[in-house]
Amino acid sequence: MTHKSTTEQTISVQQAIESRHSIRQFIQQPIHQQDIENIFKLVRLSPSAWNLQPWRFHVVTDVDLKKKLEEAAYGQKQVTSAPAVIVVTSDMEDVLANIADTVHPGLSGERKEEEVANLSAFFNGMSVEERGQWGLTQTNIAFGILMTAVQGYGYASNPMLGFDQEKVRELLNLPKHVLFAGILPIGKPNGEGYPHHRFDIEKIVKFH
Image (tube, rainbow, N blue to C red):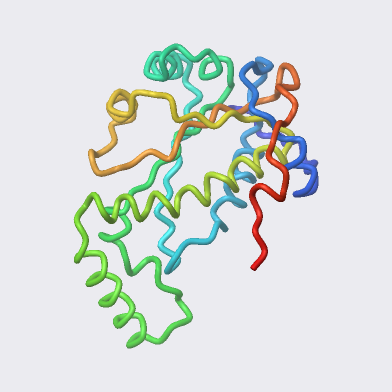
């Protein structure tokens, strides 16, 4: 990602959601560095309980590493077709080790200390696995916003859960406690993907 210019044009949230399809073939064109940064400026605004922000993103553009990721993803070609692949992870142990960083700076010193103590007590009462799963539910919120932001900047994506997590963990040198929300190949689409086939609103929405 050596390009410094940007597409500079975005589409509305409605357009981004309506136009998004899972794309498996991408145009061989690097993604503008500024677009990547702009996308993550939006993603970092994702909400999380207690503002803990457990999500961590690994942007892979190295050709050799993408080939290894493709192997870990059981040969799914969209991994190497895409100019960039984002591995979305959750790291609650890093959050817990730096819990004071999540507390709003507008709070008083006493209130900050109280908040840190309460959060530390709450999460230390869980196992590593339990708080890992808790963080993963929060990270999935950011994953959804990431896909929308990618589409909004004129790129396409394809969320993936079909991969050997331990192989990806080894490739990225990630600690065992880190959990995966998914892999997201992104780039300019080479094709339109399949038309949407979704349930009717009556199937998925109940009014009470």
